[in-house]
Structures are given as structure tokens and as C-alpha cells.
Amino acid sequence: MIKHSKQRDSILAFLMTRKDHPTAEMVYQGVRDEFPNISLATVYRNLALLSEMGEIQKITASDGPDRFDADVRPHNHFSCRHCGCLIDLPMESISYIDDIAGRSFPGTIEGHSVLFTGLCPECAKQA
Image 1 (cartoon, rainbow, N blue to C red):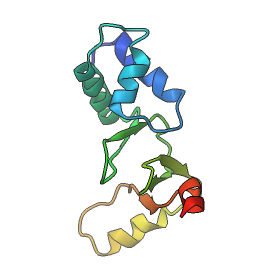
Image 2 (cartoon, rainbow, N blue to C red):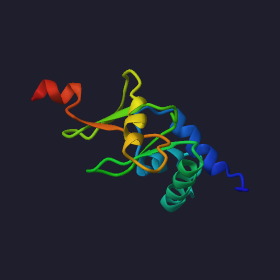
Image 3 (cartoon, rainbow, N blue to C red):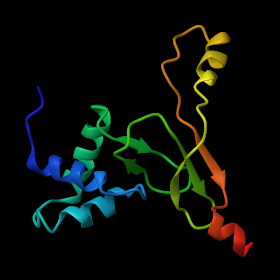
Image 4 (tube, rainbow, N blue to C red):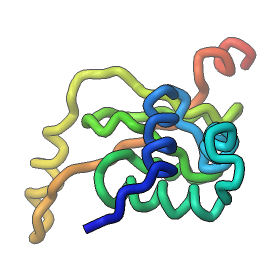
């Protein structure tokens, strides 16, 4: 059993107020008001634990730090290759890709994670 932690609760509460998928550094800055002595290592440890527990999603983009999302419902993300923003991508379900992948994979497909890349609307306007 995992010991209860007020710091972990604060990290989760902070993430629940955000839609911009903050980095660990942003989470650290956000919870320091409530816990001025918290270390960045403690934030990283708790983010990893929350992710392992399924309380948050960790999103790894190829060209930047991991980002975190308190919305654990199945949904897709978009990463802008110019400004680096990471946003939710509202779209119809593509859960059928699990079946497609399972047809040629001898193991068991339990889900997927999709990260679309390109230019966000603001960067596309400037291009």
C-alpha cells in the first residue's frame, strides 16, 4: 500500500487545474507556494508514481521534456513542432486501431497512445 502524501495530493490538484500539459518544472513551480520546501526530485518521484497508478498521463514528445495530463480518459494529443505546445486533439474515437494492431501481433493489445505533430493554429498562421 502506498502511503498518503499531501504533496502528491497537491501535485494532482495542480494538474487538474491545467489544460496545457505542464512539465515537471512547471508543476514544481506551481506547488511551491503551498510547499516551499518541496524539491524538484520529489515532484518527479510523485509524477512517476501518479502515472504508474493511472491517476495521470505522462506524455513523451520527441523533442522536449515529458508533459503531464490529469485527464486519463482516452484521448489524443497534438504537439507543435514550432512552438512546442501540447494540446488535446478533439476527434472521433480511433479505438479500432487496437483491433488492427492485434491482427498481426501475437500478444495482447490493451490500448494505444497517439501523438500527432505539425503546426498549431497560431504557428500555421505565421507560416
